[in-house]
Length: 166
Image (tube, rainbow, N blue to C red):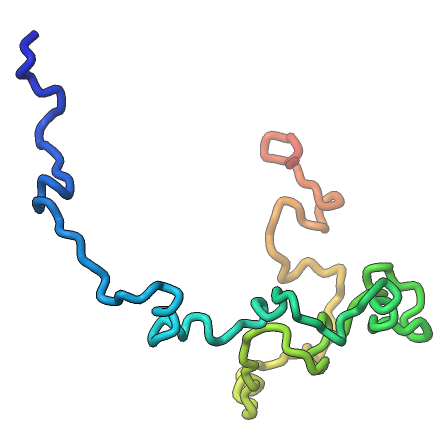
């Protein structure tokens, strides 16, 4: 086998060196170190404003309203033993921040949108009530199915005599 044979098929792929020739590397325009250049515009805007999450991750962050232990967590819960007797354990620990909007704390970087003051949505909704009470045993107006409640406890037979099953 001759050594002149190229083992790679055509078309030959080009890379950065063969396509455009060798690239000349651009020198940085700023001769200062990076930690000093970051203080100028526009780079300084990236880290100027802290988000709520980044503030809470800070070592010096302290939340006065956060519960310190299990007793504080139970005392701050919305559960009232006189009104909501025998609730589940997880329902007794619901916090005001989770359930309501009037807790006075900012939990997310989100602007609250005011609901529309006009009743345009309510005008579009029409409520209909029947003047005559219909019987619950009537099959008139039901959705047709082979599992209808009026046919043999909801089960029907196939055309060949077998039962429908799932």
